Image (cartoon, rainbow, N blue to C red; front, side, top):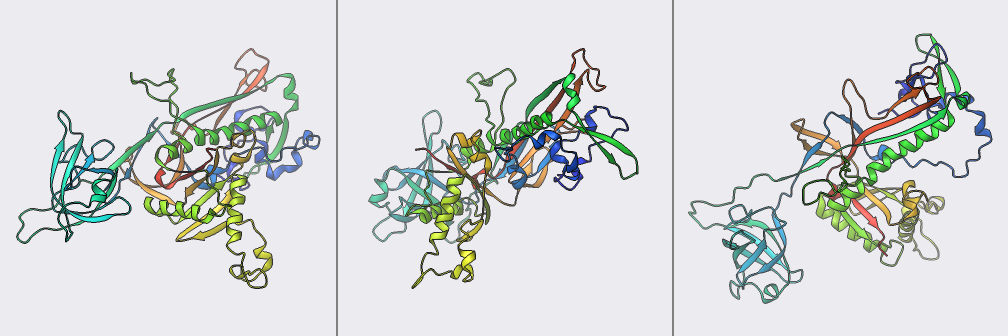
Length: 479
């Protein structure tokens, strides 16, 4: 991808030898770092009362953009390696009943647990080790659950403890197996499990219209190419803002997009060809982690953060993570970290800051390590701006894992390494829909209609892939 200021983002421009308004010689104002002397006069009269108004940039920091040819993206993610189930109940003192609904099997023959396996059974306070003897299907016409007959390793008998049989729900996991001497057959053949996910791109469009009289406001930049030839590029101040707004929409849509729900008849709830797409927030709500009403600045702030670490341990333990936060949550974490150094006899100790007072009193922490995890913290303007999520305030931050994941691409037929968060856009040899713009009207040499106006059109077709969403975390406010 091209970065601003390197000149690489201008490789699509073709200077024209004459002053003509063509789509390939338009230069946006934000691409004019090398020609600041050509900024329009109106900039001297306009006060930037809101500072930098754009909110895009998040996806550039955490992901990448890659082309695709199809209108569907399908990828597979690995499942858990070990076998564990929750919401297990007992059927008497020697049987564990595992529901079929929501689990990865349909009957005893497809159940990953088999005779000879050894289990840990617990309700959180009482824990026993058990040996599996047999499995039984439960249900009349369809199997609704599987009963796992067990005997416990206990000197008081082979039955489960009373604290376990009276519990509303148990957690179990397989830790091994045991077979007697001379056994003929043993073990359970398990196929590698995976989960398949898909997303679809959405088409975003916008345009800027200006009448023929106002085209006189167009500014021109004369440039010299590497070959020694010269030509003209043009810019338009108001169109520039329309383009900035559209570029923001490209990112905001990837963050906020929602799939239209499917009705009982199998059609989209919105219909008319509008199906939606799965954005980052929707993916985390569906498959990721959510922490509600955190208060890292309070007395138990650090313990709350440790609760998050404990959940990350369960999900995959990706060591490097990025925190994108609103202002309040960012300051809470600053205060939480600063409080960890508020000790010392006769004054404040700056030990963890190499005994440098200036360093210690710079309380805007940008990175820290807790346990075996590294966190890089930054403010996310999208959560602070009063015309975006800052006007709602229900989402306080998001934790995004750094690095890449390896998944199986259904279309390419091979394993690929991708950033956990990345954008796919439609493109082919004949058409690139990453960020497309063209001009219509009767002004500037583009005689495509009878209207005395010029229309600058913007279009993009893209979708966001959130891979390994179980490693993402959303900080939400419910109160």
